[in-house]
Length: 300
Image 1 (spheres, one colour):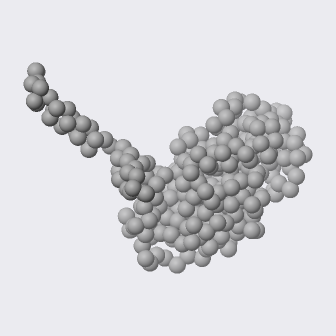
Image 2 (spheres, rainbow, N blue to C red):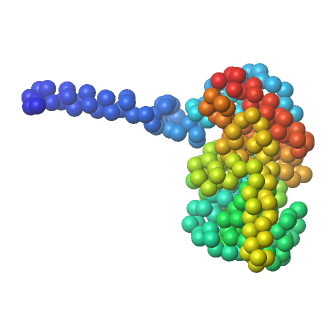
Image 3 (cartoon, rainbow, N blue to C red):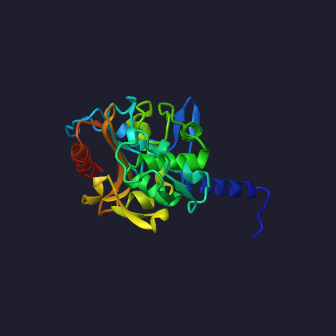
C-alpha cells in the first residue's frame, strides 16, 4: 500500500495513538507535581482513595489490606506509623542474598557469633548447611542463626550486609524503613505497614522466596552430620487457612509484638495483601489477619 504525503502523517498519528491506548502495562495515570506517570505496576503503587471508612475491629497497632491486582488499599490503620518489624526483616535478607548471585549450593557453618542471643534454634554451632537450606530455615522457621550465617556468607560481616539491605530498600523508594542487621532481633529494624506491604510485593517477584514461603514445611540437611534431616515448619499459620498463601513472613520481638505480612489468594483467584503489626498475641495475629482478609474479599 502506498500513502500520499497528505495521508501518511494521519496514518502515523493513528498508529501512535493505537499503541499508546492498547498498551496493557498502563493501569492508571496520576499527576504528581505536574508530572504524568504511566505504566506503573499496581504491586508497587497503592491507591488510598478506595479505603473503606469502616472495617472490622482489629486488636493491633497498625495494619494494611491491599488488593494486589489493582493496588487499591481496602483497609488502613496507622499505616504510616513507624514500628519495629522483627523477622519480617528476613524478606529483605533473602532478597539481598539472592541478588548477590552467590552459589546456593555453597556450604556454611553455624558459628558461635551466629548463635549469640539468637532465640531458639535447632541449628547448633558447628552444623554445616547449604545456603539454600539456610534460606529455608530463615524464611520458614524464622531461624536467626540461619539469617546471620547467610549474611556472613554473602557480605563478610553483619554490618556490611545491613548496608546492602538499606541499599535495597532505597531502590524501592522506601523512606521510613531501615535495617541494622538481618534477623529482626534489633528493635531498630523499623518500617510501616504501608512500606512492609511494598516490601512483600517486591519479595513476591523472587521465585525462590515464593517457593519457600508457600510451603508448610521443608526438611533441611546437616551436611557434616551424615545429611541428617531437620524439619523446618512455616511459622505463617495462614498456610492452613482456606486461602492459598503466595508469599509471607511472620515476626516477633517484645518491642514489636506479633507481626505478619502475607499475600493470599481465594478460590476466585483474587489476591489480597494483609499486614498486621503490633498484635498482642501469637495466634491472635492470624485471627486478626483472617478477619481482615475475610472482610476484604467481600469488598472487592
